[in-house]
Length: 302
Image 1 (tube, one colour):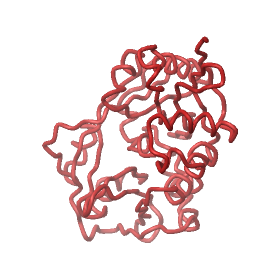
Image 2 (cartoon, one colour; image 1 turned 45 degrees about the vertical axis):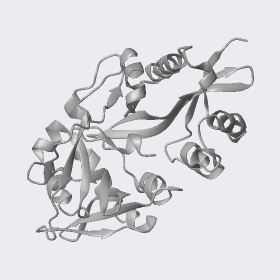
Image 3 (spheres, rainbow, N blue to C red; image 1 turned 90 degrees about the horizontal axis):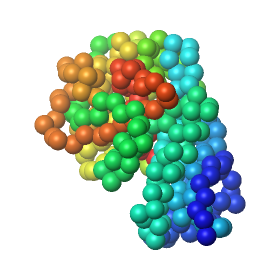
Image 4 (spheres, helix red, strand yellow; image 1 turned 90 degrees about the vertical axis):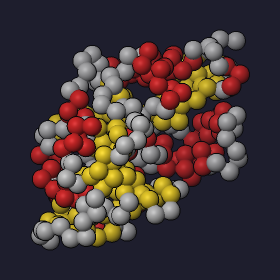
């Protein structure tokens, strides 16, 4: 029986074949095998339904890749993008180049829609993405934020409810209108879905204020006892370094080398070899790396 590659919007009737495929890798209690998490990720996103890239043999799914839509913005320009997540091929079909065929299908789609494909591939997947000629940019390197218990003119408070995000809507819109770099259009609706309503991760969401007026948001999550990870930061450019000082103690940041150097007064570049690859592909011409240097870890932390 032939193997067919197709792309379609998420629909609930796909849960059965999707869970059957995922069950070849994950235990029944894994969040990827729950309807709550799946619907949150693929259906409840305010940016739209996920695109499901699938390889089928008859009615059976044997390969899968999810494309999660997100709106990017800079200087009043909007750009549709997709995070690539949850890529796998059934063990019985390894060696049939299905991963490459799914990447080709996804690339064809973004070319047709003038959209972007982006992600942080792991070591096992990296070579496949490189062979597909994704546009890779500076890898992310680890640093540690220097805590500053008091920063002149800046303060933070913890966000617990969507209403607190809505109070900062104007500042969030102003951030993307000022920046020369592509950033996620961090609307209150997106931040509420992405961080406050996540079914399994407990994020720490800080709202920043500059002399009492909202000035942005930064998000962390616990990665081990006493250590947190900066997942993303949406702040006015002039406050970016100072805002890092208001992160919780022992917060790891992953930024490109250029950004880490630019914020050297706020972070200590750790002497670790670990790097996180990052591709941002908008055919046919690669984007300037400096324009995608502040996209954070949102693309890999679902």
